[in-house]
Image 1 (cartoon, rainbow, N blue to C red):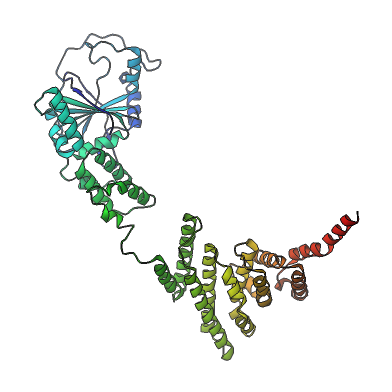
Image 2 (image 1 turned 45 degrees about the horizontal axis):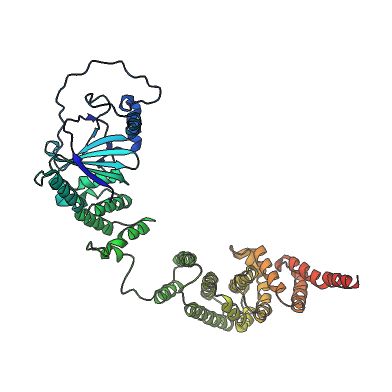
Length: 513
């Protein structure tokens, strides 16, 4: 808690009214620093010794008269008054220059709660932002609401011998972090139901109020803040701020469990089971648009989760590969049905659906860095590759998108299959990809020709030199016949050429020299 000190109130001090700042939430509170600067700029006589301002000519001392403070209705917002400035109390000795300069730099305001005439306690806040706030309050209200004030006023009354009423006592609180919220929290002590006063507040401000209320031992306000936070939505970063603010309250009897149940559960099912259920619903969706949107959403959420866990994941690889195997089995069955009967539009739609599901699963496997085994799984689908050539290209070409995605992933280093798996993938699926190449360029919006050709070339160049020779010579024969309807692997061909014809002669020349 901030440093506090008790002293007697000088009843003869006079106060001058200053503008009042009203927050958007409807609370009357101490003016903001910007408002105070504006007030001092418009009234330069409030700031002693300010720059080149010439002092006014001396005037005869005013006649002494009694200053009355306007009364405020009970349980209402505070009235705001300024502290006495230089010249208001001519009988006091002038301050020292250093003290006067420090005093001039601090903006002083006064706040009154309830009935000013019955105020018996003054609380002075010294904020870190250069504001001094003097609050005229009532000791019985503070004792009843705040354990902190009850203790301080009790010790103040004992030391002053005022019989326990604390009449005319003053508490000083130094280094106050949030003077505005402090004043607002004291004002809530005058409300019968603080929860109703929080209705128009935002989450951030309520957290600030709760922090001050807890430091003051204002338990009713803390409970009202918790009730508010339990009922309102938390948007964006508010959730993290709320959780971090209430964690330390778990050991106290405030009842924060209803709030924490929003983010935790004692009976929560296994994340793997929940994810399996979500994936099953997405894969079996019958609405194309809803399925696309949910696939994109789940994929992005998994990517975000993966980044937050530094690449580690709780997603079961068995779950993902089980889904992949199910899609492959259905795709194989569809291909078999398509070759044994007259082709239909519905069969084409089902093949496209299963292919799209596999592409989604591949993206998840790549994101989870566990796609190596799928490359081997796809390379061993020789039955589907054989049936592929028997189907119309309009119905089968989406299957080649899976092959293209795997080549791109190998070229980027997103998956690391073995040498034999890479060779088998090229032997089984490169020719079907070439057969569908013209359709892929025309019908698939997401198909990137340059990216796919780079991936195929890099995959070939990872093989032993003899395998590179056989694959590139076979490609050359197809390219010379098909032209643009065949992947252009000239860059890979150039690398293989240098490895085969240029570097051996360079090595021999070095050895001969």
